[in-house]
Image (cartoon, rainbow, N blue to C red; front, side):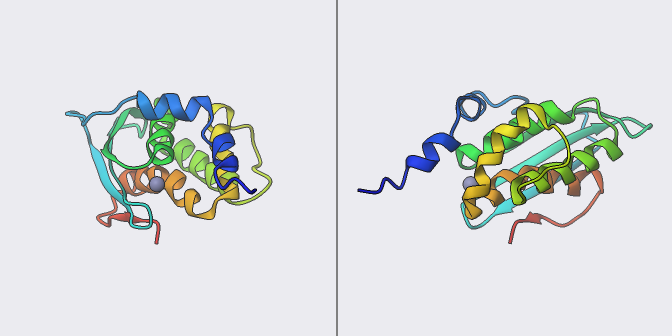
Length: 151
Ligand code: ZN
């Protein structure tokens, strides 16, 4: 008998469970200089990312609110930890590498804790859940008026 959840058990590793249950930086930010909304209609994930950026273009603080599946929340939570203190250019480079990790076999750098998300590669629908927060952050720091959509 095949078990359709077998792969998902591996995917939902302890780190993802932890970040889903206790998402880091899960709040709106009063100091926000940038924000954007993201929506993944395929799964129903919906979030808003807030960024406090310094005049020098450094992400001094970032956060998110919203609702969605465990993967989307865990990815957003991990993202807020990974991007705090980085410059806009560093965040964009990380976004590119995370996207590569989620969609190809060979990311070109060590992504540390973010690598727990690499399992979603096996589940194309989940890639959109995991990348939603990153697309939304990208839009936020580029001051895009558009709602980030994975479709
Ligand atoms: Zn989702």
